[in-house]
Image (tube, rainbow, N blue to C red):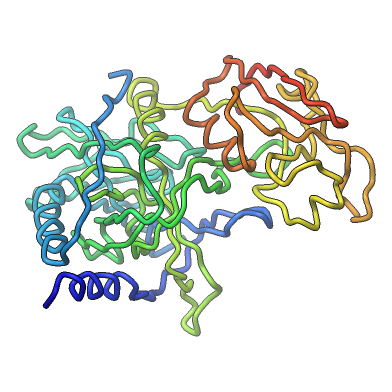
Amino acid sequence: MTKQNKLRTLFFLLSIIVVGTACSLSRVVTSNPQQPTAMPLAETTAVPTTLPPQESGTILVPEFATLEGSLEALYEMYSPGVVSLQYASVSGSGQGTGFVIDKEGHIVTNYHVASDIDQLEVHFSSGLKVYGEVIGSDMDSDLAVIKVDVDPDELVPLPLGDSDQIKVGQMVVAIGNPYGLSGTMTMGVVSARGRVLDSMRQTSAGTYYSSGDTIQTDALINPGNSGGPLLNLNGEVIGVNRAIQTAGLSITGDAINTGIGFAISSNVVRKVVPSLIEKGSYEYPYLGLTSYSSMSLAMIEVLELPQSTGAYVLSVVKGGPADQAGIRGGTSPSSVQGLYKGGDLIIAVDGQPIKDFSELMSYMVVNKNPGETITFTVIRNGETLDVDVVLGYRE
């Protein structure tokens, strides 16, 4: 077989779409109409101060045989760092996935896996089974940290990659515990970056906070994969599998998996997890404004915006950080009921141009903390100006 034919074979194999189904869950992450509807992946039968940076790179694979060998080596080296989680609560029992991050016995998983449980078992690929303790959790990022007391020789920490360096189309693998099938590996690509999902925490008004810097992937993940690692071909964790896009229910009542999955970026993990280990919680920066993740050309025309890129401010929370800084939401009725003109159009954050609200959220979540100042460049009434906002705390 010629090299050209081998490349064609690789392309064909990677173009196959695998369709699966997902169990219906009691806890569903709801979204606004502009955001993907996603659901947590934990299967249920009822209802230091910094993490060190890791050098990141991309393996280019010209031959399928080389790729196959790389996947085998990756699994053998890094799957011992992935654990199966079995838990029990007043509402039933369930399972999820986690992965080891250090030799001190800290394991990362999802908040929706580790919250409100009475007993948690951690099963290692070696056959070792121990009880684990949840020492920290965060509803906004959907992350939690579990502590186990085991011999350090039993622990295989997985390195964190730099999620800012990943590219759409880059190959990734997921290792986890779908439907209790521990040690399962699936493969796909990074489908998109910077997605925004709803947080698992509600505001006082009953809406949900936003969870930014989320990776979209087509690597097949299912209930039980929650909390497991999404790895590049160097074996670096670039995301924590969190949720799947669904397309209604099958005739058996199970949620239908569309092949679209979402993972918390490793740079969010790098920022949140040290605080969960040290304090048991993490404080997210708070803006106090609402915007669409993206807007259609028709909406842009109705709002009479001067350009198609940027984050349009629909409204600001009275007394919130954005309001105190003078950021303006729309107040003038437009030809579309409920859509108001006159709001600020944020076109850059700290001097970096943004295309939409998703990019604003990703930048803020990864780079800013409560009490720090963020500078918005806005277009207001045809004039471009900079507005400094002192970030608050989510309550």
